[in-house]
Image (cartoon, rainbow, N blue to C red; front, side, top):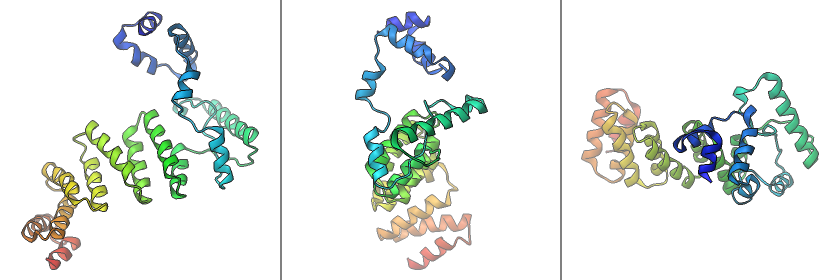
Length: 253
């Protein structure tokens, strides 16, 4: 009940969410008190909204030959922990994995690192599930999204990056690096019409962006729109007269 939470925390309703997010690791017992006061069950929530791999999933990966690393004992923000506490987190998490799964490895793994190994080995759906959880839980979504998109593209997974990029563009409509990357994804999947939309968006706001102009010229060349391709190549060569890609493409026209 949100009113009970408001009263318990002593803040107005509009400040409740941010106040809860501001609770630090060393104040985590407050979350149990808030949950109890509002009748919220963490166990029930986790049952229907799992955010971690199950023991069966971990065992399945071990059988497939994966090496499993720890990822802290109860997921604090390491930036806010003293060195001694960080060491305790690592040691406890490694020991717990060894006890539960009989492992003898001593690795400390990031979630993105695990996701990358999974996608490289063909476990795309599980990798995407892990990537989604990383992004949802991160305070630096753009940074992680960018890295995850690159990992996916390197492994010829395009659908998930398209979804991530669409969301990122909605949230950051003036981030032209993201928009350019979206153009690259659609270009690589031969959706030239959508790619052109993204590249032209970048070009209209970043007039000196040679890369966007070059891809626009490439698309117009593929569509046999020679005059339009030539126009963009001229724009590139005015900016960079020795641009080898533009000069090579012009010879093809």
